[in-house]
Length: 168
Image (cartoon, rainbow, N blue to C red; front, side):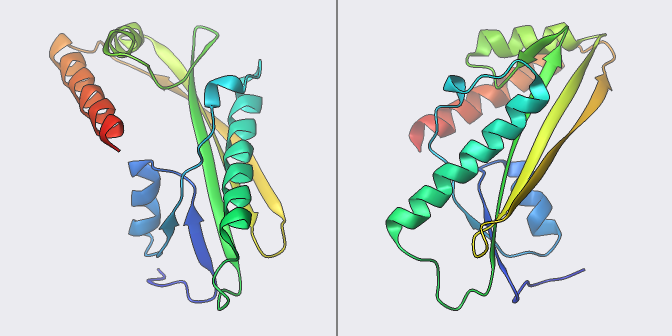
């Protein structure tokens, strides 16, 4: 597995711990840039369309910021921008990140003993050529009964994440 990627640079357009971990475990060096977009203003009826549209909107925002802030490093032969988005579909309703502890608890309790679909997208933009490719994938997830103590711990982690985001 590669430990460095000298022939190209990577910008990860995400603050997701999981996405950072995947690239790091693969041995890639990368820069993180997040898109400052209002995801709630972008709506699509189909979850597959929503996640692709959101990933593309994130890429567009980052590209625009790069153009505004000046050119990329002159020594970069190619820079790839990777953006992504994920939603959960539960009983036909698209669910994005919960906005409160109450909503987080309701989401997890609802999944207990049930199932939901996870729909995710990845969009890769070559910042030198401007070419962009992406797609989506979905998986059905089945849950056993989730004990209240597990739900409490997940909500506590959610609270901690919200607190961290508020400080940044």
